[in-house]
Length: 291
Length: 320
Image (cartoon, rainbow over all chains, first blue to last red; front, top):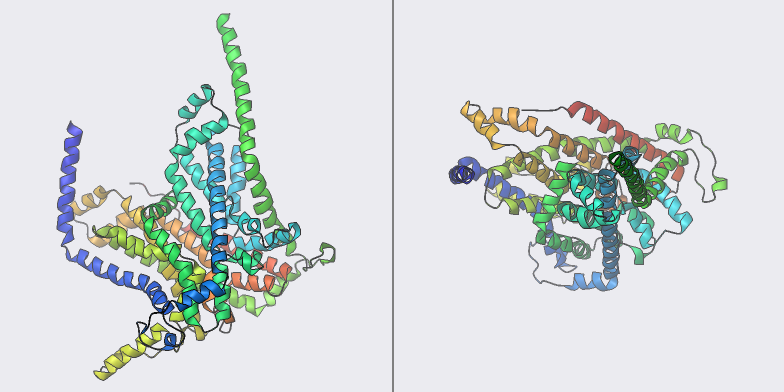
């Protein structure tokens, strides 16, 4: 009974401090600075949206709000470009990659920490060493390889670099390391298969890490630009960032259309982000503290 | 007798169990290992190899250049510009991101209400595609029609009307000026990646036990002393992580530079060109894949050296 009582006192001092803090000048100043900063963070998105509702003449006028709100820009981008197709491509690549990342990174992380076999350390070092190599160094050999094997302009070609990131293996390894071995040994003695140990016992115990890694993989693949730009050769195989950028390059000074295209590339991501913001941010914070 | 028999039996089954476990481990690792060896390590080695040959689609027609491309890099002024720009981007972006990130994280740590809303707002740009974000900023930076210059003109007129001329600011050329373009791009990168630093630092700050501060306050320490002697040292691991991650990202800058000035990528007058963009242009516009491979080896060495130096200088253990 002593413990809950102790906790209770701690709690009240905390509430007391919070109450006192809320009116301190430092706190008021903090709010002012944070609000000013927030305006800077949000404004580009707001201006993008406002611009995307102006017509071709009004975009070059200096009024802030559109005099007539129009959806014509969105209609043009949707119907004159392959935007829906790019969206589908991005979705296929991101979902496929994320599934692969979750399965393989956790399987490797589990195997490297919760199974005993010779060469464990060596294999981990081999995987870890790939973290040092920047993507830029790999795109040329990847391109040569893709040309040789006919991977250019295919979903596999776009997705393969992101299927098993070394960073993900590292992250999952950190989490599996914290699980007690006894649980696995007990189940093993009970006759559970090695894959069953991973699938039914290991995976459910690292669910928060899986959520973080999945989010990380999805966002990374959805936004990827350099490699898809190289490997997607035809318009029908482009992902959203690549298709949107090349369309905007052709649109020249039709900023109303470019802003509508940008909005369609950015807004879905922002909507998903704000729905899952707590999990997403905590996921990134988690990877930071574990990395 | 019975006992020793049991022992040896148990021993035998343990060995077979161990072998079984090892075999399964290798089965689980097979596909990932093939992936890492074939699609990560082999291409990295190939980059070195490709950098020694002139490029031709037919492998038989590739000519051995030796270190020719590396010598060419020494004479290539455009590459030198790209290298200089990349370093300049890094020394602008990284300190700004770390300082602002830590500052905002500390502000978020002092408030209690709306913290998660602010956190989400600052983090939002980080999850959006950099390519699309660069187009939005390109439009805001537009010299004649951009919102920033429109604002500067309105601002100046407002103060001129009141006779306070020293507050007026002329419209700026931004991306069209070789002097300003790099800074304009750097602002975009800082704006977009700041949120990542904020949440990493915030998580770090929340990990510092409050009692350290309370104990120091009782001893009469000033706020500055608390920051210098408690916050900074205890944040060191987080700080090193942020420093290394943001430096590596800056050295690889590509998406924003390509998209913010799409018709003159890396311009004006190569003032925004980065190594990654230079490599891309040499490889996929001019199809000089051998030379471009040599450039990627340079970028790899640069990242490796800078990271090692940073780790050497900043890593120290702090225990309280």
